[in-house]
Image (cartoon, rainbow, N blue to C red):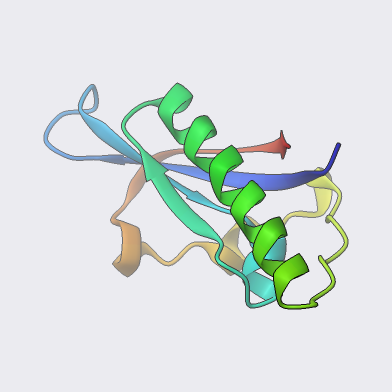
Length: 100
């Protein structure tokens, strides 16, 4: 099993109950791999994150790239990967591991 930390940014659209969850894998982004996706709720965002991680691993293998080491979750620097102009102001940010 391969697991990487993922950051979820909850962006309100009209009301707090109506939101988009933006997803980014900091380690994949730092390695120049496809690292961002989104979902309409947490379940959808987690599924999209798992799909993206599986695709990134397949692409790295196909291109002969080595997957980066996973950063321990307590060392993930949220500020380094959050750009408010790109995703809007979040009302919630979470970090967890995603595995495939």
